[in-house]
Each structure stands twice: as structure tokens, then as C-alpha cells.
Length: 291
Image (tube, rainbow, N blue to C red; front, side, top):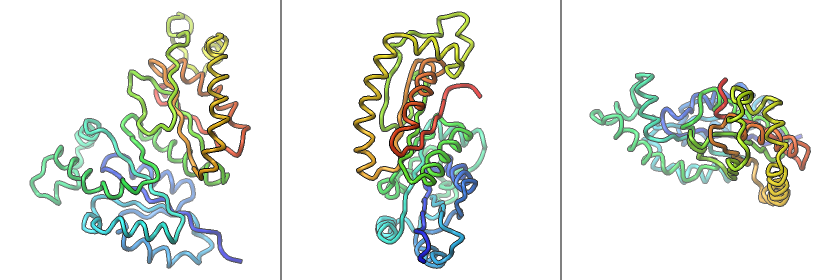
């Protein structure tokens, strides 16, 4: 009997955007991970292990340290995708966030030793330019600007580990607050700021949308009932078409003002409805609820 196909996740992106966190999350989810492997060596590496029954899920990290190999990246990736089940995850973040992260950790940007004289801001710009060839081939581009390492870890695990195990499409539903910025990698976004706000109810203000009292308040209103009727009808139409297209993941954002009350309550309720439909793995991320 032939071994099951090898599943390969190539993780790349800007330095400081979370590649190490992503690889560790994949490793904990059962992937055999190797970092800083030149693109030109991925093919020979996969050929070596493809007959192994023990290694069927592989994570490979590629970053700017392999800049000398990037000139042939497009052809190398196209060749790999023609032979293996390859998916490419590209991580990035806003420049201001990248600058803050490097200043907080006091780590040197890898482009600085390469250039010799480049300052941090120019190094980030140059790295983005050089990695554009990989970004253009990515299956999933994830903006990590508003993610903590813990949230990113959860997002990686829910997107790849759970979805891969079920064989169906993985749906991640994110609650967030618009005042903190909307996530950049959403496929669908719904604004629920029109719903009555528990923030202005004294006994509900200190609670979260995951608390039953807040959820009951949000869900009881006619506007909420009508909202769910429209949204679930839309998703009932869209999801089968997305799955027919062959998509393995879908990210839905539900936003309110602060991300603590209305959007978490809506996300929890929406997830319950989707959990039993089709062949889905539904994962919840409450981005702006304090841990």
C-alpha cells in the first residue's frame, strides 16, 4: 500500500512577524519542522523522506537569511507545487509594529548584517521587497499586527492542525474591536456596531461577550435575530461554493467598537450554528478580550 501523501506547509514572511511562533505551533500539532532550509534543497529533502511512513506532515521555514536563493524562488515553488501538496503561509505586519517589536526585543534585523549600513526602517522595506516573490505565490497571507504570540499560535493551530485532521474546510471566526483596527486577512467581515451595546449597562460593562448575561442581552434584540437570519442565509449559500472551489480555510471577522461585548457574543452564537453544518472545523478567536 502506498504511503499517504505528504502535506507541506512552507512558512515565510517578514522578520519579526511570527515565523518562529508559527513553526513551533505546527511542530506541536504534529508537523516535522525544519527552519532556514534553502528553497533549492526542499525538493531533494522531500524526495528523501517521501517513502517514510512516520513523516507525512512537514513544516519548512524560509526567511531573508536565504536571500541568495530568492532569485529562483518562483520557478522553485512552481516545481514543488507540481509534485507535492504544498501550501505557503506568508506572515507580515505593519511597519510601525515591526519597528516596535525590534526595538522592544533589541534584536538586530537580519538585513542589517547583510547590508552593513542599513538602518532598521530601510532594512524592513528592503526585506519586504526581496520577499515579494514568495508573497506573490502564497496561499495564505496573514497580517499579525494585532496578534499576541499566544493568539498567533492559536490561529496557526486552528487553521492548519484542525482543518487537516478533518479533511474539510476550516472556518475561523474572529471577534475584534474596530478601535483597535480590523484584522487584515479576513475573507468576510460583518460590522455589528448597530446592535444595542452592553457597554452602557452598568452591570454588564465589566463583563465579556462570552459571559451568559452579556450574550443574553445581545441576542435577545430583534435586530440581532434579523442579523442572524441574513448572515446564516448568506453563509449557507457561500460555504458550499467555497468548498467546491477547493478552499481549505475561511476567515470571518465580526467587529464591534471595542471587541469585548457584542462581537464575542455574536461569534459564539454563530459558531454554534456552523459547527454542525457541512464538513467544517469551526475555530473561535476573541482577539481583543483580555486574557
